[in-house]
Length: 254
View 1 (cartoon, rainbow, N blue to C red):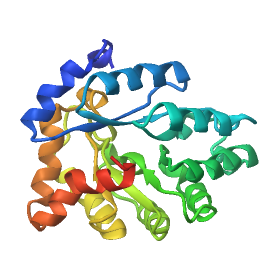
View 2: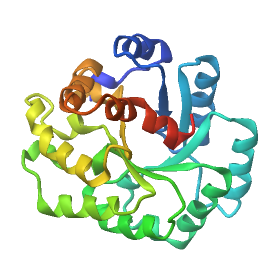
View 3: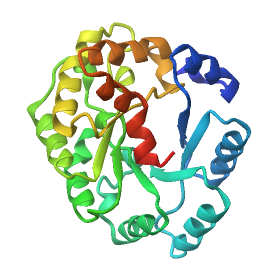
View 4: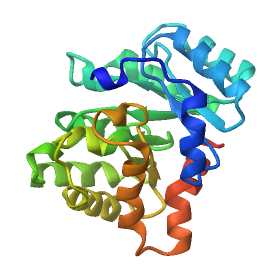
């Protein structure tokens, strides 16, 4: 992890976006503090290419509704929230009454929710999203399958399809290189996972994500985007435009 043990700023990202033909990006939380929200929102205010922020708020707090209302009024670039469910000891935290209460308030303010999980939590996620049919959800990093093992399990495929069955759930195609063998991955290692996700969610509910700068432990920004550009070159121009930007604009209300 030494590769990313440094500060990264919008100035580091902008040249990469321009080289990739990207008009902008959404920045997503990594620390579960509202202090980080302030930093990310300040960056978005200072840099037009940061089109939106996915932040963090304590969804289990009894007064979380007041925080959501405050963000809505004060920060139009705050588009949604995320909790690092993958790191929780309680693997089913998303199903707890206090957490579900917080999720139930997001739609009132037009907020999205990013689902960051490991594969063992996909079963809970199916029950979770089923309880909120009108809430826009997006699964981050294709639920982090164990790509480094170089095989795709039927269990993961069945679980991701079960979640994709809910039309209010999208999937972010991102984070794949960090779940692969960092030093020896090849583009073809990702094809079975891409096939499964694209088939399950369809071209209108998939979103490109770079996972930069975390991806740098295993690949450059250019390598990450090349994987999906090569895969999607057989798709129509409209489908590619949707995947690389249009779907994100629609999902996050950019």
